[in-house]
Length: 104
Picture (cartoon, rainbow, N blue to C red):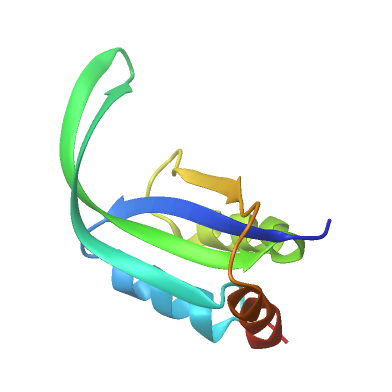
């Protein structure tokens, strides 16, 4: 699959930096923005839950997504971690080229 993605991953606040470092050091993402605190409200096992989490915003290639998904799932403490990918449909061509070059 060709193209580029923005991948959103939520995690416990004490796990975000570790996941971000792993993603970058493994070249699964060219850049990870770490938003240190987001308020999450969600359904879990029939109950509404509220947590403070961190949000990782990963820029990567579509080709790397499968491995990114599996590697993050294997390191993530949640039973069902949020790992969702959004296609980049347009962008600064120089930046998109930089993503590709960073993942080599």
